[in-house]
Image 1 (cartoon, rainbow, N blue to C red):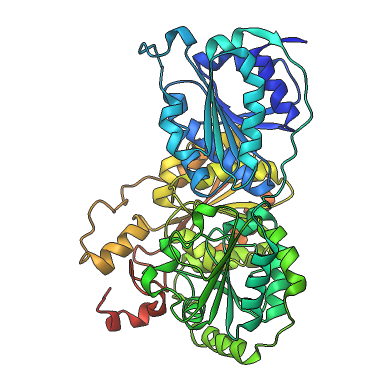
Image 2: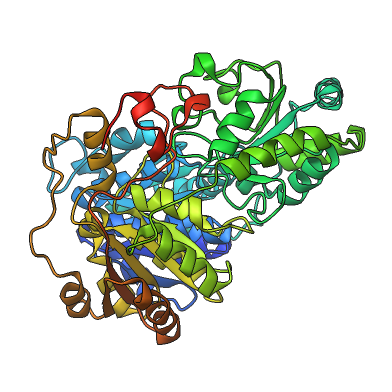
Length: 562
C-alpha cells in the first residue's frame, strides 16, 4: 500500500507494538501529528515540555521493560529532549526519540528552527539517524527499535526531514526482528573458570547493578546467592534485582551505602559483579576498592570490563544466560561464619536518623509501611534520592526508577507519569526535593490533564540539600547559591496546576495524608517541610575509601564538623 512518510512512522510504531507515545508538536513534525490524529491505536500524551516527554518515555520503559517513545519538532523541540536522552543513555534505557527537521533542501542553510540534532546527540545515543529519503524511513525505524533493545540497551534518535514526512511510497508490514540475548562471546571455558573461582571462595560477596534489572536475572541471582551463602549489595541502579527483604541483602554500596555493605566488600575474598560498571560513586578511590578480594565480572558490554576496576575473570554476555549456564557448576556452600560476621556489621551499624522531628527517612519508612513495599518509586536527584534508596525496601525489579548515571534533577515527575501509565495497577510515588520540583513542576499539569494519579512527595528543606551537605562538610559552611527560602508555595502551585495538595509539618500528619493521597484517584502533591540541615549518612568522602564510610557520630574522627 502507498503511504505518506508520516503514516509510515505510525505504522512502524504499531508494528513494533507501541501503544503509548509522549511528545510535543511543532511546525516540522505537524504531518506526523496529523497522521497520529487519524489513527486510533496509539495514545499520545502531550507533556508540558519536551524534556518531560523524554523523562516520561524513560520512566515508561523502566517500569514496563518496553521501548519508550517520545517525539518532538525541530530546533528547540529536539534540543529540549537532549537531557532526557542523555539520562537514558547513562542508565542503558531503551528509548526511541523521533524528531522532524526542516526539508532536505533547507538543511545547512540556517533555516528556521534548523538544528543538527544528529550531531548534537551523537555522544549520548547508542545510535542515531537522519532520514532524507522516504525509501529509507521504514527500514531505519525498524533498525532503531532493534538497536535500542539489543545488547547493552540504550536510546536511539531518528531525525526525519519534513519533506520525507509528506512524500509517499509503498509500505509493506514486516514481522518483527527477534531480539536475542547477547551470547556469542560466552564460552564454556570462561564459565568453568569463573565457577571454579566462586567454588573456592570463603568470603564471597555479590554486587548487583542495573544490568541485572535489564536482563531479568533476578531469579538466577537469588539462586546463586543462596547456593554460595553470599551477602548481596546493590548499586542505586540495581535496586530490586535482588529482594531487599531477603536475609542476605545488606543494602546499597558506595558513597551513601550502608557500612555493612562497604565494610563487608572491603573484607571479602571474592566480589562477584553482575551488570555493574564500578561507578566512582560505588568504588570511591578505585586503588583501595575491595583490595582483599578477587573480582569477577559479568556484563553484556565489553567496554565495561576492566574499565574502572581490574578483574581476575570476566564473561561478556547476558547475565541471565550466563548464570543459567553457570549455576549447575556451582557447589552448594556453607559460609555461616562469614555471614555471621556480615550480620554483626549490620547489627552494629544500622541505618539511623533523627527521630524527634519530621524527616525524609521517617516519611519514606512510613510510605513503605502504608504501601506494603508494593509501590513503584521514582525519584529526583539529591538527598531525597538517597533516602528513598536507603529506607524503602525494593522486593522486585523495575520498582525503583531514578537517574543514576547522569543525576538529572527534575527527572522524577515526568518519569512517574510514564511509570504510572505503564503500570496502572501500581501505586506510583515520586520522591522529590524542592530544588528538583522547581525544575519540572510544570508536568503536574500533564498529570492533571490526563488524570494520571501519581503522588509527588516534595521533601522541602528550602535548600539544595545535597549541595548544602557538601558545603557544610567540605566547603567551610559557605552556602553559595543553595538557599531556596523565597516564599514559593508549592501547595498553591500544585492546586493551580490541577492537583490535590497537602502540606505536612509533623510526624503524626504523615500516615493519614499518605492514605488520603493513595485513595484520591488523582494527582497529589505533598509538601513535606523538613529541616535544612538534615543529612544523608553514611557517607564516603569524594575519592575516599569505602572502608572508611562515616556516619554523623564519626565526623570529628574524620576532621569534619557540622
